[in-house]
Length: 253
Image (cartoon, rainbow, N blue to C red; front, side, top):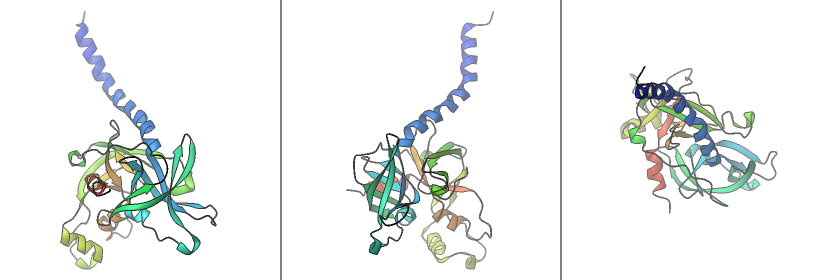
């Protein structure tokens, strides 16, 4: 007869992968109330709200993190266009006015202050501990309003820690912004084995088990640096490490 302790150990080892997989659905349930749509509002437009990207609540819950290129869109002041976010409250979409309170153009990050009651804030993890091969997930609004204002989650792994700009043999292949980035020292970003789409910019990249945010999806700044010399850019996705968001959050008063 086999040792009962050995049988228990074997059962635990066999069930470990299943337990790990079961963590993501629970994490998604916690994450979703914090995910918002970042866009603009214009009363005389139909529809009046226009999606620009994804954001998520941080800090005290009245702050929203997103990409600078998402929040920094040109507003039509003559037609009273304003920055806004759409949050899901008790299953209903609720629009909140928003304003930019901090921005880092270099890292393509922005923090917004929204009106109304605080949203559940996502915890920021230590992105310096991220390793290649680590499992990750991100939640946002792929392909904008085409698929509806319903947050969608994708999962994958961190396939590489890579510089945002790749040096090339001919400097003529580099744009002026990329030359500037190389001169300053290239920013390291997370290359993901996961597919993101327009609308995912600003989505939180999080640990599937803890739900801690370790990065922010970016589909513009990084691709411009990594793939500017390619005639047909790849479907590889990228994220800005969360350490830069933590630093930006520290400047908000």
